[in-house]
Image (tube, rainbow, N blue to C red; front, side):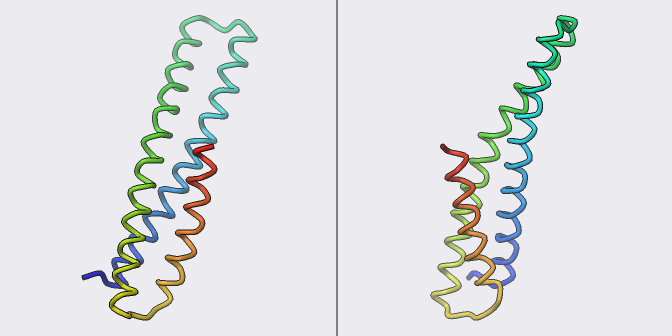
Length: 112
């Protein structure tokens, strides 16, 4: 049976993973700019190769993080449904609904 405590934990998990996803996306942007800058300036081939590896690693994290976020969101939604069915009350329910809305918008914007 789902409890408000479980709901609060799953809500926080969704928030954390959404933040992580945004952080990885920013990292990819900055590493892409850095790699392009190094290519323009004719950096040492070894340094350029290392920077490209860093960029590739950052890019790999985005799909992984997106998948974890989608799983956490589905888990949060099912827990919220269980709590609503058991007619429990609490501020955690409102917070969870707000987070679901925010996370769904993040997932939709990252997919496009």
